[in-house]
Image 1 (cartoon, rainbow, N blue to C red):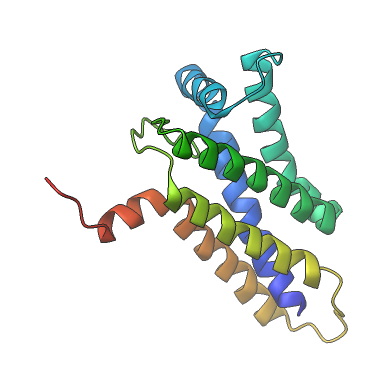
Image 2 (image 1 turned 90 degrees about the vertical axis):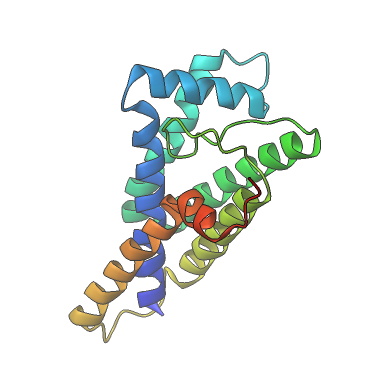
Amino acid sequence: MIYVAVAAGFLIAAVFLASAFSKIRSKRQFELFTASAVELGLPSFVPSRLGAAAIVAMEAAVSPLLLLLPVVGFCLAVALLAVFITGIVRVHRAGEKVACRCFGGDSQTPLGPRHVVRNALLIAVALAGALTAFSSAESVHPAILIAAAGAGLIGSVVFILFDDISDLFAMRRL
């Protein structure tokens, strides 16, 4: 079961690193993310830039925590994803159109049910990782360990490019 934890750890680490760094790769990207964080429900008593920076810092903290304290890293990922789901559901139910700035960029794709599904799947991966993080590692095979890490990294691409992939399969009316 340690292989599940390794695959989950690499997947979650890559997703959260990509998310954090895409938001700070330029001043414009950070400003776009800050605006979307406010639209998603960042409390008004929290200065918007400080709140956005705190979110990015927590996203960036997931990866090192997965190395040092795996269960804590997985739990932080679950908590962040749950907060993101809450914001997405709130704006979607209110009929608001908030652009997805999950991975930076200039996406105009509004947050909606597919983002809830993506985050729920990531929660499932993180929970699987947390539940198997302390599995017995007595007979670990290095090749399988490397394969598990690779599978996690490949899987992360699906989540990072989730909007693009779902657009390929969605039936759009012109």
